Amino acid sequence: MDDVKNLLGMSDLDGDRLGLLLEMAAKVKANPDEYRRALTGRSIGLFFMKQSVRTWVSCDVAAIELGVHPVVIRNDQTGLGIRETPEDVGRVLERYLDLLGMRVFEHSDLERIAAVVSVPVINLLSDLEHPCQAVADLQTLAEHVTPQRATVAYVGDGNNVCHSLLQAVAMAGASMRVASPPGYAPDPAIVERGRRFGEVIVTEDPSEAVAGADAVYTDVWTSMGQEAEAAERRRALAPYRVNLALFEQAKPDAIFMHCLPAHRGEEVTDEVIEHPRSRVFDQAENRLHSFKAILLQALS
Ligand code: CP
Ligand code: NVA
Image 1 (tube, protein in one colour):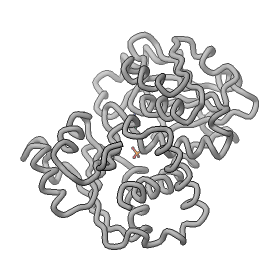
Image 2 (cartoon, helix red, strand yellow):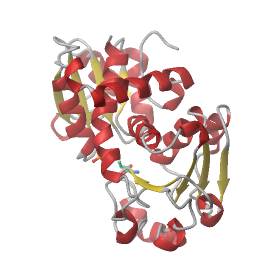
Image 3 (tube, rainbow, N blue to C red):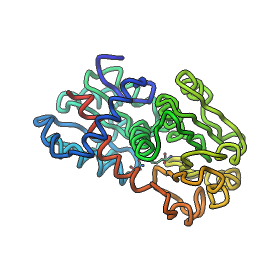
Image 4 (tube, protein in one colour):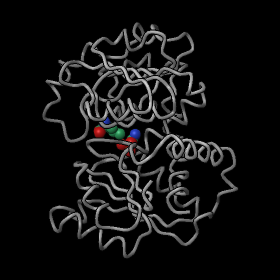
């Protein structure tokens, strides 16, 4: 593990560090008062090049509840990559802040900044990964089933959320199955990373992925920045919609998961996202608790 506790992608963690994060996330959820002001006097940046509801608000509130001062920085007001280089922005911000949380388009921007700063850099979503989401998702999964005995099925675009999820699931000792159409499968290098920890099956058949699973997960077909491809993506991914018929092929007590925002009627039908076994708002809540755990691990 590096001395600086970066979280650019799931490969910055290992099974032990993920286990500690999940333990801490469960503790802060059960006893938030015990951790109030645990990091008093620190300041962090929350930098956004894309829109956000959950990440922005949960990270801001998590910081405040730990006694940390969060500075939200919107790129339309700062101009990373336009007014100045990512490296220069990072080297300035580290003079004011103890940690940089960043939501970017290009993952390489995070790597360029992490290479030149000495404060932790936390990925708040890039084109490649969404590790904070995966930690919250594992917390949510563990509230339903023992992860070591679970099978998680992801159906749809093999995107940033899928990349972090498949590594996190394998790291936690669970079994991962991903179903995507040709051309939309997860990056083979990331699948390989996941396979170093556990089973990751990639298929084109949604039923094969979902059969007997403990959790069925999907995400939007068109991620932020891919809007020009929306029509083509809708065509390719239509057979991968999570509808009731597909969800019912999972275990009878299986949960439905989605990082949100959802494009209802595209990747998931209303009856599945509103299903009594949908856990999408628990996932959103757990972004708050798990980000506290991420801050405590990075700044303690
Ligand atoms: N799940 C998630 O990261 O949501 P936001 O894009 O609203 O932050
Ligand atoms: N895959 C989505 C996730 C949003 C939280 C996106 O990148 O837009």
